[in-house]
Image (tube, rainbow, N blue to C red; front, side, top):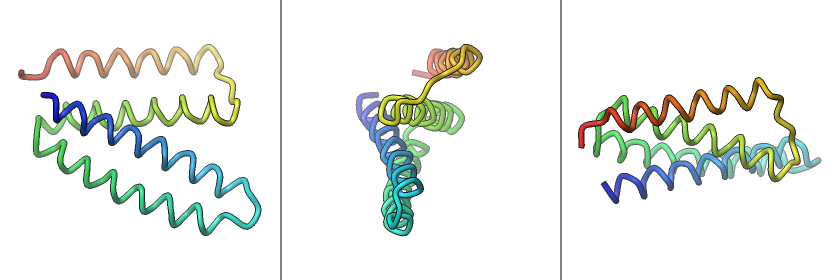
Length: 110
């Protein structure tokens, strides 16, 4: 289970990197192509981590935890780095995703 957790964490970190690089590339003049290329390099790497996760565990659990957590990590990073603001309904959506991930994780065969 430890290696699975490390791979999930690595996937989440890669997703944060993708979001930040794409945001930087899209909002900084003259950096679009660089952001696109670097973001896609990170994206391919994260896809390899997802393949490792799928091999290690149930596909639905691995995908749900990886993609759900990756999305949450991206949102948190974008809010923190670019000083975004979340509305109450958005925070409730995040809480719903966390609840779904907890249900997936607790229902996994150990």
